[in-house]
Image 1 (cartoon, rainbow, N blue to C red):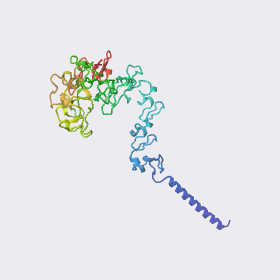
Image 2: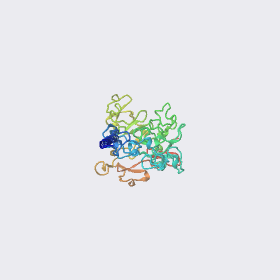
Image 3: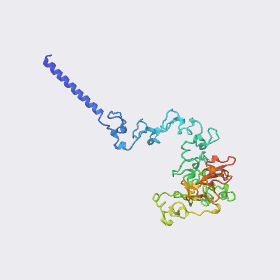
Image 4: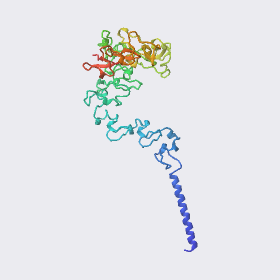
Length: 430
């Protein structure tokens, strides 16, 4: 090969190399663009080590503005500092439920397998108490929600309300914790168990209505007139709802009479109104949320059909409500006294009870407790043998003398069948 040919070959080879280098650079640029191109493909498009919504290039896109957390990719997709199952966005995601036997913290709550409340009390492989089956599985004398093993098992126990744990098995139902005793807001109305006006006691198995779940309950010819608290149909034992000779065993809750005329705080402003707890009666929301429910009125005609115009605190400004006003039967009324736990979660307001109100006395100085009622700062200042507790700076009786105060039916005597209603142990009516 002569010199000219060699020179031509060298020039050709150099040109080819330059072309190949240019082609290679072009291809690598296609594979690694200057910015993230697809913000939901789980791929690092621009090769900067950041994927999808984790990459700053994607933060302003509609995909990432929606803050999606992909719950099983090991990345903080929405940039809120919480990854996968630890992120609240993943609550309820199937990938985040706890497998109770794989040695892994599947749901990211810091506890794995039987140490996790999702498993303890629910999965038989974890031993101990199975919460909600009506059986004392670990033979420690405490069943279901009354067993401390179930304290944080949600559901059926836990959740901010002390569960009573009373077992229901009406009709052909399997034994289970009654809806009005399980510590849960079963009907999602913001109130659970004794704080829900649909619950006539822990034996009530229907928190969503004034039925109790007991077959035939209050379905007789005078079902809307008889005692609603005895848990059966017919008037045979309605006397337990009006027992002035022995009020300590009156099954009517504090604040009610024998026909379900009860003092409750219908409109949520701290004072009580006497209304019938039956049919469609519910707590009144703010005006306008349900037609005229909660709005001011002067007569029933100002309210929607099926609503009543009732007076705040029985004689104040009036508002529309699904609850019908009533005049209690004084002969059978179990009054809601200061210091008592009352029906539907109601308590008499501090200004009605005297004593300490917001750190001072009601009248700005001196004793404002009723005559014969001692002042107090702590429960220990009161007479515990008379069931007195310190409420609003005054010693008030929470239950009649000789009656055991309670939080749950498990606090009540076991020699007879008792249940806990409005903070006092009452013998179950037979």
